[in-house]
Image (tube, rainbow, N blue to C red; front, side):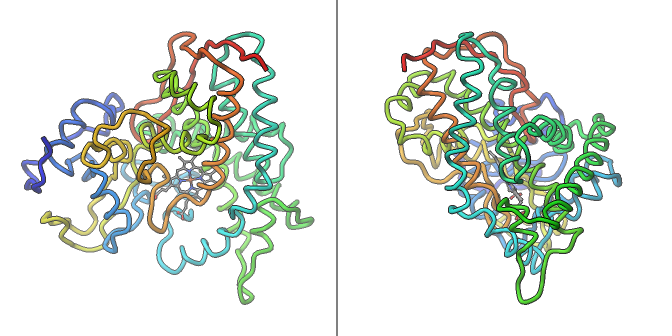
Amino acid sequence: MLSQETLPLEAAPFLDIANPETSVRAPAVRAARAASWYARTPYGLAILRYEEMGQLLIHKSLRQGSHAWPDHNGVGAGHFADWWRNTILVTEGMDHRRLRRFVNPAFSPKTVRTLMPDFERITHALIDAFIDRGTCDFMSDFADPYSGRVLTLLLGLPEEMGGRILRLAADMGLALGVTYKERLATIEAATEEMYALVEEVLAARQAKPGTDILSIMVNASDDGDRLSHEELLNMGVMLVFAGVDTTRNQLGLGLSMFLDHPAQWEALAADPSLDMAASNECMRMRPTITWVTREAIEDFEFQGLAIAKGTTLHLFSESAGTDPETFADAPFDITVERKRNYGFGGGIHVCLGQIVARNDMAVAYRLLSQRLTDIRAGGPAQYLPDSGNTGPVSLPLAFTARER
Ligand code: HEM
């Protein structure tokens, strides 16, 4: 039974999300959501329901709150923290609008349409390499190289660089998990190497622009205004950081949903037009970014709760996506039309690469389902902690090749 009332702060449930053992899908989180639309956490508040998450994503008293993540983890300075504090994600107001104006055109549906044949080519090539075995590790044999190669396409790099890009992005991505401080040395080394790589690519694009998104950004101008070298560098690193590890993890989580629901896999194989629905439904129930962060820029009241300036709010996308009040306990079903989910966030910081990601994942699920049947676990899977940014580290898969 859902409670509609706002509990006073001291009566609200407490969720220890700083503990890597805490899963955002744990019964305690479900129980908290049933009792209250919000919970207390060591970082601030967790928002647990769909309606409230939707309203808070666009609330004028909130800013993107991830700028405080390094400080929350006791990592005040360093390569990663210094880069992070200047990224588009944590930039606000006119400065953010200006950055989006320059970079949005590079991610238009038209740009993505031209990439679709390449998404298909890469998917088939990766499947060809393991299909005769009847088994694979979905992460190392598919999700890893796929997401890395897609990013090289976006940046106009040789596809062989996909592996290096993936490793750097994954190592930097450790900073967004709850073990940031323990993994600091790896994170710092990856950030330095990523900067050097993007600097090199940028110099090449500035000397000889191509049709890739970095070139579009280099050339973008507005009334004489342009992105500076520093801004381009920061953005280039951001694109790799934000685009590779997310896609890899999301594909793995999506596949884990299909492993649990093989009839849905067959439904997709039978009707390839469900590919985008598959991409969205996987993200609704198993988003890789399990929370997005906001921070109060002023004291305000929301649904009777006084929220003080400086409070951090974590908006739980998985909890919102499975909220029974909105989705009526709907099981994983790619054939049903759903309300939008918040796996790509929302409001002004909504994912810049969402059209690319939705489409590259849709292509991958569609072609995989057309070539593999009888999918089942090929061994025990290994996962990152189920909070912050999550996904499989390894996902052994067994299958039968379909007749072509
Ligand atoms: C499945 C893959 C992806 C997922 C799950 C994902 C998720 C997200 C989420 C949740 C946000 C919003 C964070 C917030 O509101 O606080 C975001 C922002 C962003 N994403 Fe993605 N993303 C994906 C792929 C990509 C790709 C492929 C790119 C680009 C190559 C990209 C670039 C960005 C950028 C630049 C932002 C910051 C936008 C801003 O602050 O204005 N993402 N993403």
